Structure formats: C-alpha cells, structure tokens
Image (tube, rainbow, N blue to C red):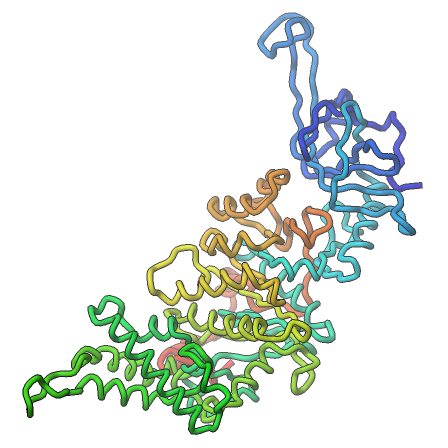
Length: 584
C-alpha cells in the first residue's frame, strides 16, 4: 500500500476550482482550517489510481457570507462562512513505478477533478513522505544541504548534476549564512574523487577551509615580487600577454583621448608583431599561420614600447626632395606609451607586469591550466579538486578584469577541449556583484567582465562549465546572468530591491515563497530549482570548517581587557600594499 492512504473522513475539503497548477479547496471544518499553515504540504486526489498530487499551501482564507443574498455586507440574517485554501501543485507521488514503490515525480500529468478530496500532509505521513524524497533525491548524485524545516528527521538533498549543469544562485544578507552554505557545498565537492571547481575568494573568507581535496592559491601581491614566489607554492602571476585585445585596450587606452582609435590600432599591430617574433624565435611555426592578437602567446612588452616610441617620433620623406615631415602617428602615442610605462612599474599590478621568468615560457600556460582547471586525478600531486583563489590583494579598480580573465581562461580551455575528453568544472563566484554588475559604463573593465560571465551563463552548459553566483546584493548582479541560473538558494534578505529580484527568479506558482525572505533564521534557506526535488525551506547543516566570514561581536570584543594592536600592523600592510609577512 502507498504511504498516502487516506480515509474520506480525513479530508480537509473538496476542490472548488482548478487553474493549471493552482487549486482552490473549500474547507467546511473550521477546526481543521485553524491547524493549516501557509507553506505546508497538502495532498489531493488524482484522477489516476495509485497517484496523489502534492501541493504547497499558498493562502488560507476565511470569509463571512450573508446566507440570504450572498453578500459580505452587513445583515441581520444568518451569517455563514466560506473557508478556502489555495494550493500550488508541485509534483506527483506514484505508488509504484516499475519495481520502485512510492516515487515522487516533479511532473503533473493530471490535475485534480472538481470535488476531489484534499488532505493535510502531517505527522507520520509527512515523515514517510520526506523519507521518500530524501531516498530518491538526486538520482544517486546527492548533494546534502541539511534538513527540511517541515521535518527535521528528513535530510534535504539536491541533485548534484542539475545544480551545476543549470547554474545556481546563493544569496543572502550579511550574517544570514550565505558563506556557511557555500562552504557546505564545497566540502562535498572536495570529497569527490575527481572534482574540479574554482572559488573566486575576494576577501580571503575561505582561507580556513583546509584538508584533502582543497588547494589554495592567491594572486601575487607586491610582497611576492622579490620573494621568488611561483605557482608551485600557490602564488599566481597573471602575465599581461593573457589579456585579450579588449582587455588591453580598456587598461592602456584612454577612450576620452581624441587619438584613442589610432592608439588602439597601433598597439594591436605592435602586439601582433611582438607575438610573431616570439613564435619565430622559439621555432613554433605551426602556430604562426593562425594566431591572432587574442591568442595566449607570450611577447616582450619592451619590444611593443620600442615600436610605439619609434612611431611616435617617426619622420618620413616630404613632398619635396630632401625634406621631412612628421609621420602618421607622430606625437599621437605619447599618452599611450606613458600609461604603459606607468602600469608596468606599478607594484600593485606586479602580478601582471613583473612576474618571474617562468611566466614568459611557452609551456607555462599548460602548467597554469593544469593547476586551475584539471580535475583531482590529473593534478600533479593528485589533490586539490577545489581550488580557492584569493583575490584580496588585487586593486579594486581592475578586480573585475582579473577575475573575468581567470573565468575566460577556464571557459576557453573547456571550449577548445575535444568533447570526449572534456572534464566539467564549476566556478564559485563569491561577492559576484563586484565583478558581474548590473550597471555598466562604456569601456570599463566591468563591461568586459560582464560579457565574459554572460557568455559562460548562456553557453557554459554545452562545454561543461557551471556557475554558482554568490552575493549579498542580488539587485546589483547582472540580470542576464541571474536569469540563466535555474537553481536558487535564498537566505534571509531584508532589502526590498534584493527581495524583488529573488521573487522574479521564483516560479509564478511559488511566488508566495518570497514573503518568507525577511523572516528566515540564520542558516535557513528557501531552495527552489531543477536540482531541488521538493521546493521548500531548508535548515543548512553546519560545515566542518567554517569560512572566516563571521560577524565581529562588537560588545564582547570591546569588553575584553587585553591589548590588540592590530592597527599598528595594518599601517605597515597599508604602506607595503600587502598583508603577507605581517604578524598573525
């Protein structure tokens, strides 16, 4: 027998109206109506034997009606009540499918008939149903989040395949448990034998996460330039030659300059010439015929500046014999050359322009790709399926450009890998509003970043690149990217604009879920999407290693009778533009 066997006298009421996935049920028993709660589950009879329809209670209404004329206006005649419950259908429980019994499906092959019975799902039946959901959720690819708020005895799973295939959003105000939830997911990814995931750690929050399956990198800071830091000890230099044409233009060319078009064209030509020389000198003839300005090929910045300087002072033969005149670009490249010189001597940008010798080697890109993109089994040391990249020392003005450069590297590798040998990789975009912004400014680094992430969001599934967008301000995250994310984990949100964005991501039939956003407890989430078998409220389990994102306890810290003196080290770090080597 199925787990949802009811007697007719247990019914809440009968179906009065049906509209696609929304059902209205009349409830005659006032006592039973009082026990119902919004966002709890209900069961409705299906027109097919052996099936029950499962729904979420959206609204409970109790209305007084004039028995004589059917109005709700004042009258001395007998007053009756018309009590109704509005229910959103979310799936079907089938008693038997093949050899399996009690199978929950996220499909609606039927809708209830008028006058079909409706029952409340509670007590032992609720526990049995939640166990069914827990046992079959994820089709064997179970990603455990925690426990259902409806029934704390039932573990809440997501489908790990669908969570990453169809992209995901994790949002929540500061202190709501957003980083906690992310860490919970990352721990399970790291436990897989051949995982591949990158975490864009903007503030160093995930540095406490250590252990098997997790490897840490950081973008080189000023303190690493003279310290012999290399990729082998977890320090990443991102050489300037990885910048594409658009990125180079945004960094070096002042678009407000009247000579900007000429500067961009000449710089592009100089870069191509420098790349051609590198390939020729290295004997890479097989690449020479097809490379472009965007091809990831090392080149000498000195040679580019030398060529630009030559054009900037070039004199050519005049119309009259023995005379000279200024060349086409004479004096028009001075600002471009100055910007190039200033950028490459800026120690804050040392990770771009002052990398060690290894970054100019032809084979270095393969090493970088192996370290960041390869799965655990292909890693040199066989560890580190989850790669946490610390961007905390990257200047804020070019942060979007550098984060998107890593994302573009991953996507390009996936795109150019033969499909039979493609290994999936996930990008966890923490503080996504900083580098995937909704607002744009023409030619800015943020523009380039948005274009890259939009492309990954739209096309990543085909190439095995998944996005997990994490933000405390979803209203400031690019809407095109968010619209491509079919899984939502929403923690507490108190800002009205942020709540409105999340409501737009919810299915129409679950729009009422959005009303819970400001009242969720810390560590509690609304989970909806392709990866969630049951759209519901979940209490996220605490990760083994908590990220360094806890809110500072002002009152307790102020009450401690001890010296701290962290501000003294901060001054030195500020001067050096690096926290490396400071006392802990």
